[in-house]
Every structure is written in structure tokens, then in C-alpha cells.
Image (cartoon, rainbow, N blue to C red):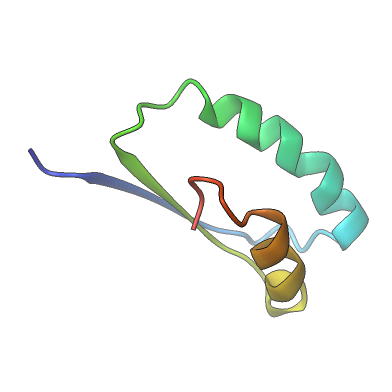
Amino acid sequence: MRRIVIAGNWKMYKTQAEASEFLPKFMSELETTSENREVILCVPFTLLNWMSKTLHGSRIQ
């Protein structure tokens, strides 16, 4: 069976504080998504390091 990839380009330009508020809401929505889907977020350069640490171990790449 083919694996489905869901990719999103983060164009909201959120600050780290705004992203901290947004991520739990996004993650709870993601719980309703089938496990056989690969989820990729393309975040702004300014959040790469923080997001990498924050999402480590989650199903989001």
C-alpha cells in the first residue's frame, strides 16, 4: 500500500511564543489522522532549531 504524505509550508511567520501556542492545537488535530500518513512541516528558518527540538520523537518531520 502506498504511504500518503501530508506536507505543509508554514507561511504564518509565527514567533516562537506563538508557535508554542499553536503546536498543541495542531498536534491534537493530528491525532485524528491515520497513522499511515507521513506528516512534514516546512517551518521558517528562524524556528528550525527550536522546532527540531520540540518535535523530536513525534510523528512530524
